[in-house]
Amino acid sequence: MQLEYDADSLFIGGRWSAGTGRARTTWVAPSTEEIYGRSVQPTEADADAAVEAARQAFREGPWRKLSVHERGALLRRAVAMVQPKISGIAVTSAYEIGAPLGVTTMFAQVVTTVVDRMCDLAAAVPDVEAGTGLWEYQIQREPAGVVLDIVPWNSPFTATVMKSAQALLAGCSVISKPPPSAPFAVRAWAEALDQAGLPQGVYSILPAEADVSEYLVTHPGVDLVVFTGGTPVGRRVAELCGRSLKRVVLELGGKSAAVVLDDADLQAAADAVASGVYYNSGQICSALSRMIVPRPAVEEVVERLRAKASALVIGSPLEPTTTMGPLASRTHQQRVLDRISAGEHDGAQLVFGGRRPPGLPRGWFVEPALFVSTNQTSIAREEVFGPVVTVIPYHGDDEAVEIANDSDYGLGGSVFAADEERALRVASRLDTGSVTINGYTTNLLAARDPRKWSGSGPVTGVAGFQSFRSSRLVNLRAAAGAWAPATLFADAGSP
Image 1 (tube, rainbow, N blue to C red):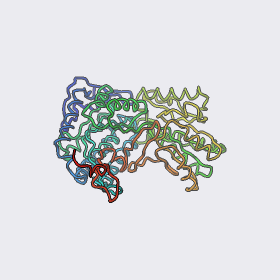
Image 2: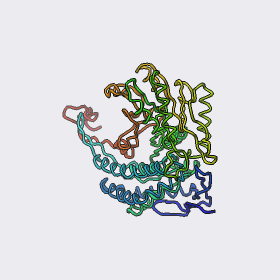
Image 3: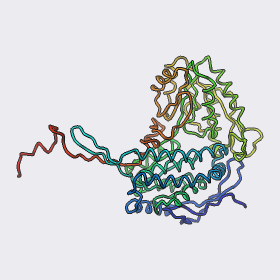
Image 4: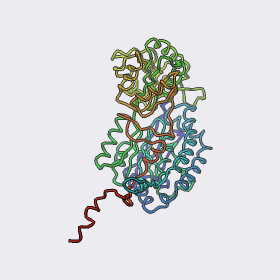
């Protein structure tokens, strides 16, 4: 059997190691259902080795003692080493997750720009802030320690690079935990960091299965867990961290709403919704999977979305003309098809799509789909994480806001309107972590603080950088006339 990829080693503490286990896992391409790669399966002993290397590097190594400018310079060198490999990384990612080359190339390219800007943002954040009030004081910030960074399977290379870069900039030691199904593309990041001169022990990559992942989450040598992924697994991570009150940051699922006001450009709204819901086969946590539309405009919006879906070229992610590939796994394909069936059973109207595409007998494909429904059906309320949009009619701005907020999730959203001030007023009423006006985007350089079932704590922007640091309040001296407990006994004498 000829394999495209064979990952016969693990990157543990800055060194390539054969690992301690004998198990090897074979991987099947989502578009062909044929085996294309094989990888080492990390064990608990490998996890122990990674944590011990990280702890020793954090206690004794030079990395945390460098300035953020010095750490940023090394990360920029690593990114520069990644850039010539982007086309190869994109091909590898297409095998791993099934996304078209246009998508995986963009994923790989954007990370170089984002990390460069992260370095600028972090360099402007002081390590010590002084303040006055009743007391003169300092707030001192330092690296959080050993970070376990668990990344999702829908964009594993990009998420691994961006989140580990934030933690490394903060001076932490980092163990990246990509999904076991995507162990190949991330190796380029480990190689780049090694060649750029990252000190030994500071960084490891363990694409572990669930049992070893849980072992890492509960490991006493891990100080902070940062998880991006689905809400059910996020709950489990939070539960495990809660047992020892370990710090945890969670970026979870979404059911984001596109609120289309009655003066909006309907084509712009359809373009934005389609770009998120049908892009990467809908496997985007912030996709605008609910489109809240004035009742008189529903038919026109449906036809505009039908045109967008019809223009998609569904097929092999390695073909340059493909614009939509398969879902990332057989299990997820069946989950999406089941949720589409449940939506129909609930009474939602399936207008088009939602089946396996004709002419593609192999591969985990699902046609782009559109429902029209109230906000009370399962298809409108549950995260599908597939190429499915639900159009929900409304009458009046108040009802639109009520529908948008009637969700268990609070990750993203958009408002479309010709009047920007009106759009801003509506945006300010949405119970969600981020809102885009007249578009769809994920701003990777600004803080997004998810709400409700979408998680807790930011991982992007300056606030995201601060998530990877710990703070210490140092009180210096009381201001003149300020009350202080010690003054109560200043004249009491000695016993």
